[in-house]
Length: 364
Image 1 (cartoon, rainbow, N blue to C red):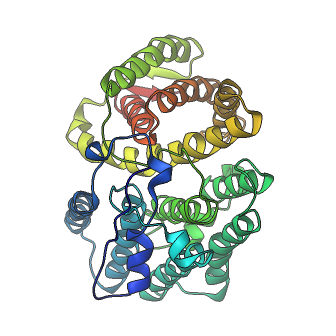
Image 2 (tube, one colour; image 1 turned 180 degrees about the vertical axis):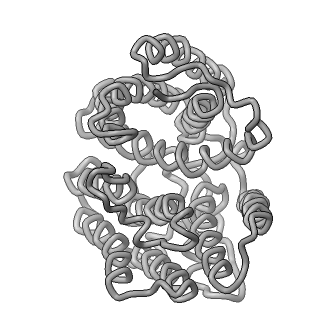
C-alpha cells in the first residue's frame, strides 16, 4: 500500500474537495506511483478535454444560460470521474468521513443535476425524484452490505441497476429515461451525462462505501502494456472481422470524408463508452465474480458472456450477432484487464475496436 498523503484544499465547498481529493487508492493498486497521473496532471487533462468540448460546442453555435448550466454539470461530473483515477488522493475518505462519504458524494451529484435542471428550465419534481433515486438507492444498497465481503448479492444488484439506467430500451418500447432526464440540448448529451452520473454513483458505492479492492481505476502506463494492448486488439480483429463479415453483420466501408473528426470521436468513445463499460464489466463485474466464484477464469468468462448479452438491444432487439461479437470482445478486454490490472488498458483496446468499427465498417 502506498504511503498516505493528505491534500489540503482551501476555499470552495471543503467537504466536496475532501471527497474528491482524499480517496484511498486501494482500487488502483497495480500501477507504480510514478506511472500514474497525479492530481495536478489529472486536473490538467480534465481542463484540456473540457476546453476542447466547450470550443466544439461554441463552434456548433451553442451558448446562453441553458448552455452554461449544462456545461457546469458536465464539467463537474467529468472532473469527479477523472479525479478518482488520480494518484495522490491517498487519505482514506472512509476513515475521514466513515459511511457518510458516499452520501456526501451523492448529495453533490444531486446538486449538480438540480443546477442543470433549473438552468435549462427542465426541472420537474418527477425528474428530480428520479435522479435522486438513481443516486441514493444504489448508495443505500451498498451501505447495507458495507461489512460483507466483495461479491455479495447487493454488489450485483447495484451493477445491474446501473447498467439498466444507462442502457437505452429497445426502440419499440419508445421511452428513453436518459433523454427524459437530460432534455437539453435536444437530448444530444443525454447518454454521456447519464454515463457520467452513473459512473460517479458506482464510485461512491464501490470505492467509498464498499471499499472494493482490485478495480484498477487508474490512468497511467505500466510495463509491457503496449504488447498486451496491441496483441489484444490485433487478435480480436483477426477473429471479429472475418466472423462479422461472414455473419453479414459488418461490411467494409471506410468513411474517408469523416477522418478529420477522428480525434474527437476517438476521445468521446474512450471516455464515454469504453472507460465506463470497462469500469463496470471488468473493474467491478469480472472482479467481483472472480472473488465470489474464487476463480479468475470463471469470473473472466462469465463477465465476458454477460457483457455480450448486455448488447442484445443494440441495433434492434434481439441482436444475437451483436451478442456473439461482444462476447468475444469481452474475452479480450477481460484478458487485457487481468494482465495489466487497470481498466485504462482494457479501455484503450475497447476504444480502438469501437473507433475502428466506426470509421472502417458499416453495420448491416
